[in-house]
Length: 252
Length: 210
Image 1 (cartoon, rainbow over the protein chains, first blue to last red):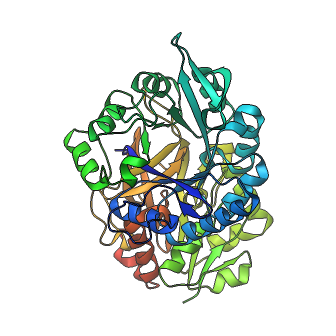
Image 2 (image 1 turned 90 degrees about the vertical axis):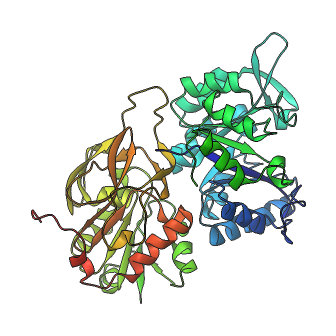
């Protein structure tokens, strides 16, 4: 049976992981490759590396890190952050990334999804969506890490992204992100039940139970989290054993 | 030992090269028929759409080269699919090593997503390729088309329907999953492939029709 996936997300700035310094007995937690390796050994199913560097120099550093990850790790990984054009996708896939995550650039110019999937196939193209549930109950997409509202409806945009060839949808609820009180299960369920591509849930992981709920109630195909893993609040082997006990199919 | 990875412009071949390097071999990436023909082992990877991939093979004159290989060879993902007789993807004639038609996954219930993406379990494993692999071991898949179970199936996986996770006929080995992305289980399978001695095919369970 296809397993539900657990995906740690690592923010990388100027070649170093941000957060993550409290990670279990790891001397080099600042090195994205070493931190990625530790997660891989703990049983992470995939990894996401987000480049949060603004500078041109930092981009080069990140590309070098992607090459090292591809050389050294034996599980799939997605890279994102600052992907604006087909050339960025080519640079990162050539460096060895399995998938790229496109966010604001796809909202600004949706044709980018068509271009990426025409060149490299749907399987490499993750469309990341940051959305917030507004006071009137609607879910609206935001640009630039949640700073700029677009007015686009979450569900409509997710379906358009799928139609254009996206291979997966990574949905982050801005209402839930950082709150550590569970994922946006209602919105996730609506996405997962109506899309024909996998949905990765992001934003809200605080306890092991939140992961059970995002799969059992939110119907997500995968769950992504950062700080609960980086700070050692939840350890992946224990999380997976817990999920297995709760009858969620995970890779052990 | 010389390991040739067939280079025909079909997707990411670097991850399989890195995986082989982690196992201590330094493979050569080549589209040279002679070089491929005299390698000790041949890896036939690939991603993307079947008819285009097949066309690229033909343009390089590699279709006949692959069919005539006598040394152990390993097709991965689209490599496995192209070793079959026919694919529904692009109505493509394949290499015909495995006399079976590659089919598209058709969702049957809500929650059946296509592509089949992620970690899934192997069952009914045999063949030298699957040495030491246990029932229920997980490997990583990304695909929308599948090879139905057939006389050459040496590992099964279930997604919507049971399908061939791996195939073997004589010296031709193939996996639908990506061993190069399947952690320690994948490493074991690649190691098994590298360890196969020419002629070891006798140990595999061969259907009598071959």
